[in-house]
Length: 81
Image 1 (cartoon, rainbow, N blue to C red):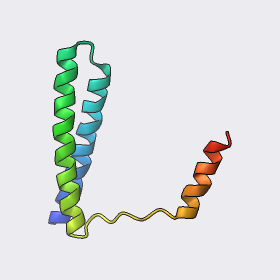
Image 2 (cartoon, rainbow, N blue to C red):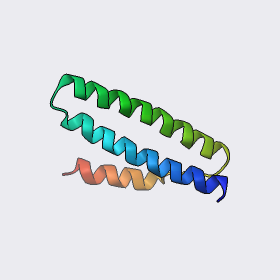
Image 3 (cartoon, helix red, strand yellow):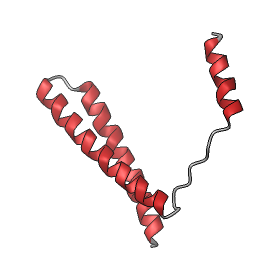
Image 4 (cartoon, one colour):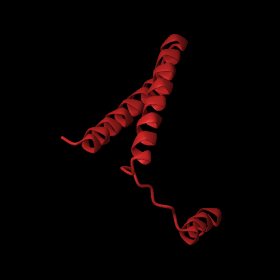
């Protein structure tokens, strides 16, 4: 397995972990549990950001720039409602 494949899998896993921690934070019934999930979420987000930055540096994660006309069109749809 190539390094790029491993990094993509790691990124997908950490995104899933972030999702779980986010829901745990939102659904917490006590302050202690909320704090534990929130701390874990922040740590997982830091890891996700490091993985993303490494992949972007190597050219393995290419983000497309959104077309400004499409952005403006979408904004107008929601403003007019």
